[in-house]
Amino acid sequence: MWGISGVCAQFLFQRKQIDIEWMVSVRLLVAGAALLLYSACRARAKIWHIWRSWRSAFDLLIFAVLGMLAVQYTYFAAIQHSNAATGTVLQYLGPVFIALYFSIVRRRMPSSLESMAILFACLGTLLLVTHGDLTSMKISGLALFWGISSAIALAFYTIQPVRLLKENDAAHVVGWSMVVGGLVLSLASRPWDVPGIWDMQTVSAAGFVIVFGTLLSFYAYLAAVKRIGPQKTSLLACAEPLAATLVGVMWLHIPFALVDWIGSLCILATLFILSKK
Image (cartoon, rainbow, N blue to C red; front, top):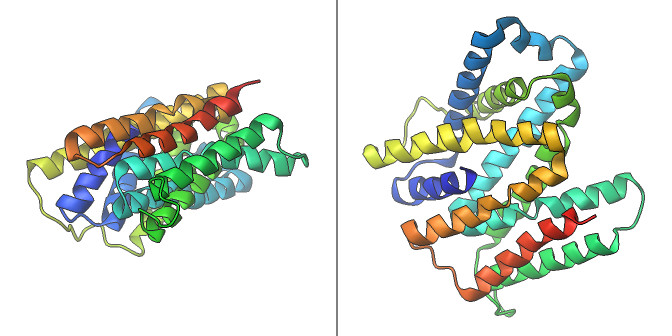
């Protein structure tokens, strides 16, 4: 769902002139409100539990801005400046940053497997941004910046809410973080000013991004983090870049050469290397 929604976002940005700020703010506000409404129908009192302690409220605010909002905005910005396939693959450098974070926190050097993963990540990124021609970059500096930022945001999004998820339902964490993140972005953008070209294609693509690419997918991801932990969740989510690349090539005819596939596979290989015990 994330992969296909990335392709839908590229379609909206590049062919329907939809603004990133508008798309992200509306995506978060609509999906977050719907998730909280669903939770309230099940148990109204429990959705306010997360605000009853200063620690949980503070953790939620940090997660909403530096996790939920950041991972959404940086990912869409990477897509706008490149394409859905490249932006999604660069985001999947996130597990490497997770491994580096745990190495720093535990005060140890990266293991041999982690070092191998870092090497594959660097090689894959190099191939992806140069297409094998080391004398020049084939994607813009902005695309690379937003792609790396997206990977860092994904790592933070995966690690930071572990304590929140132990104490609260995943639907409440996701719903409130989306609403708060959407409200914060709305201070800079005005979601009531609707940009772009609107027709049935725009409505369908935007609807998929909001419902499947946000509401259902983010809940599923954090529910998985709660059940099996951040590292295994990152491994299983590697279907996203494959979906984004395949759908992007078939639907939007994204140019993706052999060297791009090799670079992408190098980055995805890091997930399997890091999962090996």
